[in-house]
Amino acid sequence: MSGEAFAQVGDLRLCHEAFGRPGDPPVLLVAGIGAQMGAWDDAFCARLADRGLYVVRFDNRDVGRSTHLGGPKADLERAARGDRRGAPYLLEDMADDVAGLATALDLPAFHVVGASMGGMIAQSVAARHPDRVRSLTSIMSTTSPDVGRATPEALAVLFGPPPAGREETADRAVANARVIGSPGHPLEEERIRAKALRAYDRGVDPAGVGRQLAAILASGDRSASLAAVRAPTFVLHGADDPLIGVAGGHATAAAIPHARLEVVPGMGHDLPTPLWDLVIDRIATVVAQGEIAHSEAARPR
Image (tube, rainbow, N blue to C red; front, side, top):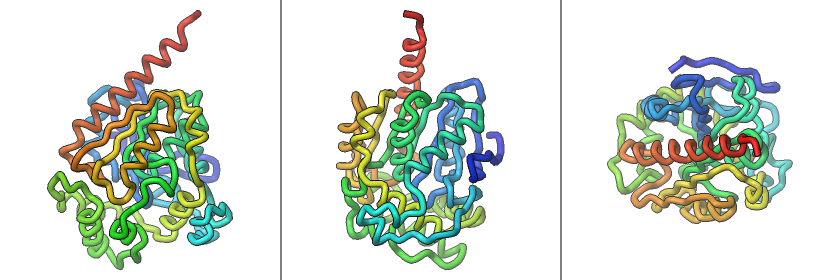
C-alpha cells in the first residue's frame, strides 16, 4: 500500500493509491457512481496484490480527493432522454481519465476492472483503448441505462435526497445496503458504516454525483462499440441485483466477443466479503489470460 498520491490527467488531478509491486501486471480498479476509491476495500486490494498483481485504485472525477468540476449542473431530465447536452461530461470522458491515469503512472498497457458505473467506464476503456487494455472485468454493470432496470425500491436509493451530516451518511449507507445488498449474505453493518464515514471525511459532493448520473443516462448504449473489444473479458453479476438487473450482465457478455459470464446466486449490488475469494480468483484468472494473449501476439511470426 503506497499511500495516496495525485496524478495530473489533462485538467484533472486524480487521487490514487497502489498496492503490490510495480513490476507485476497492473490492474486499475474503477468505482461506481458516487463511490470513492475506498469502495475497493484495503483488504480486497491487498489480496489481489498477493495474487501477483499491481493494483491501482483511484477517485473518479467529481468524488473524493480528485478534481470536482463544479460549473454547469446536470440536467437529469434531458440526460434521461439521451440528450448529451444534459450532461457536463460522458462516460467516454471518464474512460479517457482512466487511460490518462495509466499514462501518468507510466503504465502503457494495463488490465481494467469496474463495478456498477465503474463497469460501464471499464467497458468504454476497453472499447476506446484496445491497444492498451489487456483484460476487462465488468462487475454488476450493463451496456445501457435501459438494460437491467432497477426496481422502484433500488431507484429510491439512487435518487433519494443526500444525507445531512456524518452520522446520517453512515446510517443511510446501512439502510441502502439493506435494499440493494446481497440477500444471500449477512449484512456487514460495521464495515459499511466504517467505509461511509471514511468517505464522508474525505469529502462528499452531491452535485458531483449528479453529474456522474447524468453521464450514465446521456451516454446511451455501448453495445455497438463493445463489439470491437478483443481483450479477454469476464462479466460477473449477482442473480439478485435490484439496482442493475442481471439482464445487464447478460447484455454485456453478449456484446463482447468471447466474454465469459458468471451469475452468482445470492449476490446483489455489492461485494460482501464472503464473495471476495470468488471475485479475486476470477479477476486473477482473466488477467492471466490477458497476459498470455499479449505474449502470444508479441511473438515473431
